[in-house]
Each structure stands twice: as C-alpha cells, then as structure tokens.
Length: 61
Image (tube, rainbow, N blue to C red):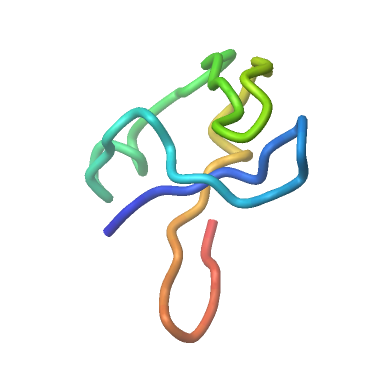
C-alpha cells in the first residue's frame, strides 16, 4: 500500500518518494527526510508523523 504525505509547501497530498512496507514504516524512526514538492520543486523536511497510509475508507497514521 502506498505511503503519502501532506506537502508543507503546496498543501496537497503526494506519494512519498521513499518506498515503505507497512512493517518497515511501523518500526521506522524516520526523522528529517527531505522531500521535494512535485508541484513547485521546493523541498521540506518530513518526519514519521507526516506520513500516512491511505485506505479506501479512511486515512491511518
């Protein structure tokens, strides 16, 4: 299942450029990952709490 983040630059939802499995994300200590906004090209830092799985019915963190 893909992992997304809410962009701190444009405010839209984007697919994470880093691939995670549910197990690797659950056990991860992601801190300060830099992702570039696909819309503007500007970069921002993201932590584990900024990432989410998207399900048909709801978002889970």
